[in-house]
Length: 178
Image (cartoon, rainbow, N blue to C red):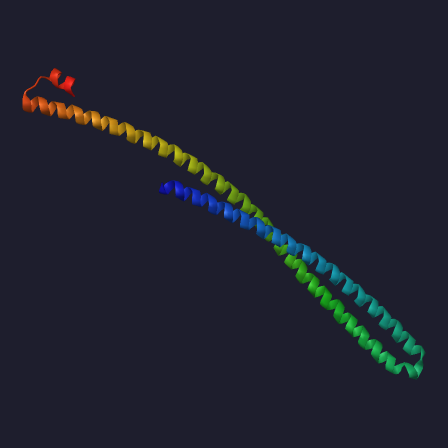
């Protein structure tokens, strides 16, 4: 039956969509876990940048104590401080980007979970439609059988009347023969 097959295919498709959606939610959750690990690494980089900045400051102080012999070291300490500041700034920018990605993935996960609920509701509706379709099919088949019986009785009655009119037999005789 075409209608029944169509409903079965729709149910299978809804189930497939639901499964795919669940896999996507899992992958996004894995992505969030990886992003959390990246945030920890960025925190480590930011801490290293702070410590490097402090070391550069201490080196500049020591270079000042060394007088003219520490002039070259002062330049190196200044460069190290600049690199530490650039590392800190880059780490902050990366952290902001990752936090933005985390927010987007959280919202996407929420939407996908909502989508999963809607898919499940749709699947239930399609299943109910399938059951209703089966009931209608059964009722239709039963009615078709009854209509055939009625049509056969009408045909016999009409045939008997025809025989009565054509051959002049009495109704009682026809009814007993039919």
